[in-house]
Length: 242
Image (cartoon, rainbow, N blue to C red; front, side, top):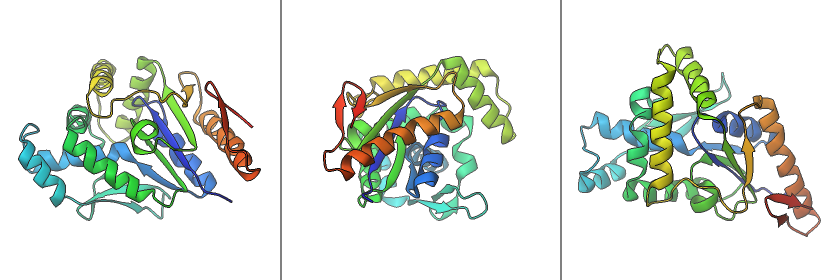
């Protein structure tokens, strides 16, 4: 069966990563968490004491750091490795969340990460989630989904994730962080967060994860069927017609 690229974009804490991981597992595809890559760059710059506005040093750092993903056999999940060490927990901390949008808006960082993401998925058969997958990284992705949810719902989800890792953060602080990131991500010059014209909108405010996964898989099935019969998916507005 032909392999495709599935692009899942949208705002933070809408369930993008969890949904993308489950879809990838169901299809036997690779999963790439592009947001984790920008978080890793942010962590690296902080640990090296590199100012975000020191562009020559930032560009040098991009040639020095090495980002990969390693599959955890116990959990079945890919974990981010920075220079060979698993840093999954560190990159999810609030201190990184507070700064990652600023770092991801640096053109040199954006160009470097997009190029690496495109290399990772050059053979297709991949589910990739982020902010600009369907618009910049893979504008030719066969399936595009743009996820959103009410900000308070997103904040409560993020609070639960942090609490599970032992980090207690007030929901008000998380709401402020999300709104700031939404603004920075949507207004940056380089690859802003926006819904691709051919992306299907998915509001997850009142949805369970399994419903989100089923939503994406239904569109994948429709697209694969259309490709199998040789017609290719025909789009009518935001719906795939087969």
